[in-house]
Length: 416
Image (cartoon, rainbow, N blue to C red; front, side, top):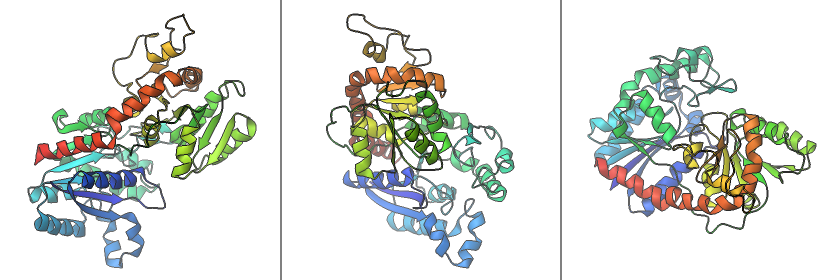
């Protein structure tokens, strides 16, 4: 099987999980015997472009002529079975879908965000979830609020691009939704359910989990939508030391908030920005990982890392988080979930979970509210040991590279 993987890489100065996932997927496909033809561009190329190329940048999200010419040559020379598209902006343009179809090549797209509808791709604005452009032919609110790169002009261009390419997106042969929430987003956009496959990303197997550590780890970009403020508000509702340690790792605009919390309480430690070895050590030192996002987070990789290491997760019930934790199905009655068993004293049987706390297969989800998060923290601490094996089992069954790579190859095969 021969597959073109098309992706516009985000700037290296802005760490991108999407870049990492594309690189890993290429390596996994190659190891599985798929011939991968990378068709990659990088936004880091823009500063060194000649003036003539820079002059075309404003229209490249709509139609990037050079990319279409180069893709046509690649397809003509190698005759791939499938084109797999990730991010097309700004140097590829969704027009690559039309170019592939012109040559008779079917297209698969992995949907990493909500940019079919939302100019920023986040459904998040001014510290709150925002879906003002949903259902609109032209995303005028995105222009008014400068949602794309803080620029009204660039927002107008992106909103126009999304309007122009509604038909392009709806011609994609198969969409890969990373979670059930993304699948819901695509159906709402008008994509037929039979053209959507739910297939999450995977990460390499770190090996047999180390024994559980103690306390909680929050590992994320320190920006408002990742919920550090929500977590700290909930944490302060418990006496210092009553929940064990809280470790905070990451960097960003809310770093002063993390530093202040660490100075304020003995049970909070700010670890700063960590390399891969540091991330692994921080996960192993903890018993529960927290994903406190206040936006519809598509697929926070830290959750998959936690499950791979046999750590259950306490997360907000937004975006892809319930799916990742196996909590997106029918709700269990209070007192019947695994967390209820874990929080019962010996001989007492099952007890009801606090209001708002829902047990999943590999963790717990709560509404993005401080009171609900505060109620869930002691539940998670008490239930960590019981859910740890289930967390690892969910990783092996759903997120292991061997599993997700075969599912991706099956998607390709269904179109070729």
